[in-house]
Length: 192
Length: 288
Image (tube, rainbow over all chains, first blue to last red; front, side, top):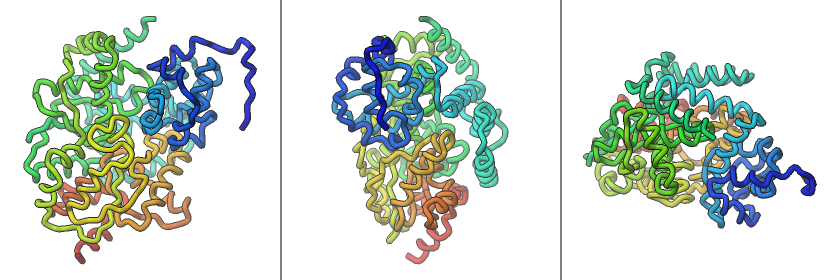
């Protein structure tokens, strides 16, 4: 796939790289060697491979980056992070892009975004993860077809005694502490 | 040796056999896992995708709870391990994070000073307890059994704290210590796709299919991560259709495998809870 960008137009956001990377200086030194892409198990399905993505970030093509599916397919396997000859925190940067994309309302793979949010909310309610509640919340919010095959798996797991249907069974004693942590994080993250 | 122990959420449900076999195996080897009271979810891979601070604060609550006990905090789950480990790493890397974490944990009446040492169970068994102790305890040698040592990603990456980050060997050595053969497997740290099996199934299926295809010829797969185990174990029917070959290879937790060599009872091994049946494997062992 060849794509042409007109870099003379005002679509460049030169502050973008500052916001994206946990270590901006390193990201700007990317030499486009492609080791990240070669190491990535899901690059084949990405709109832009990791190598291409870093170049787009450097150029400040914010819309192209945040509207792509690339970072949503990152499984956090850290192969790229470890191999990058420039020491770029590739995996962490992918996570940052996920957060920025949701904040900008441009998430292309909304199923992943809804899954992470369902996870966050389930843990807030119980302190631990309840897998059945997570899956029902997720399928409800993502309105996914295909839930049927997971229901079948869920039934198998239940029959094997692996899952309980009672979400409150995983509640911890320190739920008030967990709630206090969530609230304080929300407060700090709301600050500019 | 005594360790604080955080099983992690999966070990209370889908990976129950990992929890029970881990406790039993460690106890048989003369050490003890003491469960951390009231631990909470570490956030898995999900929380960092929605909030950076929460991805630090959730595991940090456990580290704060563990600090008083002054024992290493052990977890069996690779995701828990990485999330807990990362807190210490990030506190060292980002000076401004300390103040924020103090404020967040302070709101919950907690404080973490950074002293809890985080360990993966594989590290504890391979390096604290040691291969020799495992070999000595193995009453029944698993001779002739070809076992794929599948580490997954997050137990060794990115920090490679206790083993090589691409081609680790600690599990290989433990498999050989109980008389089995570590199946040559170049993809021992290739990702299983994690949550993509749920959110983008076609991609998850491709990754797992490749891992299982490369394991053909082995008798079983050993894992040290509940997510890897679930992904490799639960979809083999669909994957057989996809690959056009019959894939039916048991996927055991390492501690279930060690437990077989220690002749531990089914009540702690819970092999019956694995989705691909282990009957053939047990029959094969009886012939030895």
